Length: 366
Image (cartoon, helix red, strand yellow):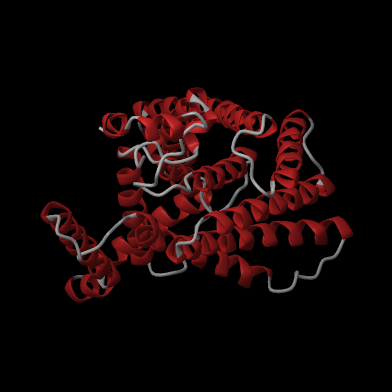
C-alpha cells in the first residue's frame, strides 16, 4: 500500500507513468533551460572568447527549450486524465463540483493564451482562477489529511505562492488602471512569500521525510544521524563562510561574494528566488526537499512526485507551465491520502467468501 500511494492508482497507468516521466523532464528543463541558459548569459564574455563554450551553451539551451514544450504537453495530458477520471466519478471528492469546472477553465485559458497572448486584464483573470483552483485543492487536502506536520507544510507553501500571486495581480491591476503609485505592501508580501517557500522546503522533511531517531531500525537511525551531521555541518559552514573567509583572506572573501551574487542572479532569473535570506537556509531547504523527494519516489509514493513538481516550479511562476506544475503537484499530494498499512477496501462479494472460508483470507493476505 505504501508503494502504490493510495488513491493515485485509481487514475490509471497512463496517468502514473505520465507523472513519472514529467518529474524527470521537469527537472532537466529546470537545469538546462532555466538555469544553464541564464548561466550562459552570465558568462557571455567567456562564450565570445571560446567558440566551443558558446556552442555548448547554445545546444543545452535548445535542448532545454524542447524539454519545456515536452513538459507542457505532459502537464496537459496529466491534468486532462485527472479531470476525465473526475468526470467519470473515479475518486469523487466533496469539492469536485467546484474543482472540475475551475480547473477545466484554467486549462482552457492556458491553451487560449498560448495562441493569443493575454493583455493585462487576461493576466489578472488567469491569476484569479489560479487562486481559486489552488484554494480548492488546499481545502480538499486539509479535509483528507489529518497530520498537522503535512498541513503546516502545505499551508506554508500556499502562503509562499500566494505572496507571488499577490505581487503579480496587484501590480498588473495597478498597471491596468494606469496608477503610478506603488501597490500597498507589494514588495513586503513578495519577500514574505519567498520566506514561506523556504520554510515549506524545510518542513517537507518533517511532514513526509519520516525522519525519526526513535526507531528500532538501526539502518534508518544511522541514515538519519548521517543526514543530520552532513546537513548541520553544511548549514553552519555556509552560515559563517563569509566571516571565516574574511578572517583568512579578504580577496578570497570578495571572490566568494561575487560568486554568490552570480549564483543568486541565475536562480533569481530561473526560479524567482532573490536570496535575501542567508544562503544557508536555502541550501538546508534544498537538502531537506531532495532527501524527502528521493525517498518517496524510490518507494513509489505519488506525494514524492507532487513535492518534486511543486518545488521544481520555483517561486516566480512567470510561465504558464510552471503554474500548471504547482496545480498538478497539489493534486498528487491530495491523491496520496492513504497511509501505509491502511486496510484495502474489498469488493461487495468478498465478505461472504471470507466468512464462509476463513483459510482463503490468510492466502489472500499472504
